[in-house]
Length: 366
Image (cartoon, rainbow, N blue to C red; front, side, top):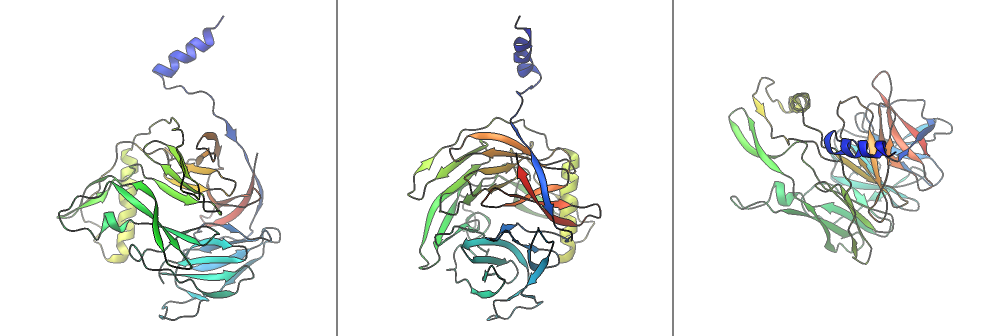
């Protein structure tokens, strides 16, 4: 008899039943014995140590998961002079590996990127041609390029009354020559009307789908399409491979979601003197996107972070391969989020401890 397949087919149509997913399992191998207020991404160095930043305490750090040793690099300063030494920073916010022995530290407040060797010595300031505003370059390959999304074209710089563009360029910057070209186009954000008291302005819809862009060390690029839940690939010669969309269940944006976002807006507004009783209305999408964060793995995978139904629920990542095909879902332990990858297969997570502080753990994927 074939009642079970028939029943499941009926359930798929009526109840939204889906076949069992291929699941990857994470096993914690090591974690640091010290905690931090808030962590950036994690980069693995050639000897197995890691580099990252505590973005609340504003320190640039390296750590050895085998011994538990943590070292602070450089010096945090409150005011950064125009020609300040490379070892100084104000707000270390992102770390990138440029080539074998060179690490880049992006200073969000100093609006500059400094170069360091893996021993922790500052080498100098990375000269990057100014393009598309002052936002820092976060994405790099190891063959001499930085990549920047031209969000200025949709959030500022356009003539009053002109329509917003329907796409946003991804610019590739040759670090040695300053040559700039466009290598991809992201879908423009969806907009709606926001109000702050009596002031009205356009704002990107919260929870609307967005595209994400990244590169592998050799300059191969990927583009995660938020409206289709797929990953497209661009070879170094410019050839594109279109990925296959992956079906997902659309989760509604709840009033709890709206209240949480508005509470965060009010909390952030305190530092700018925003009155806490100011009437605020933000535009929200009706449903959550298929993913709200994406990170590429050196082996040619892209991990897309699913939005959560509840804020404290475990995070799940959909993994796509280099052909743009969905491979499996990976569920992280409660309180842990993806922070980075190692070239030999390590997965790094930012782990929330009982006291609310965070530490870094290295996981093996099975």
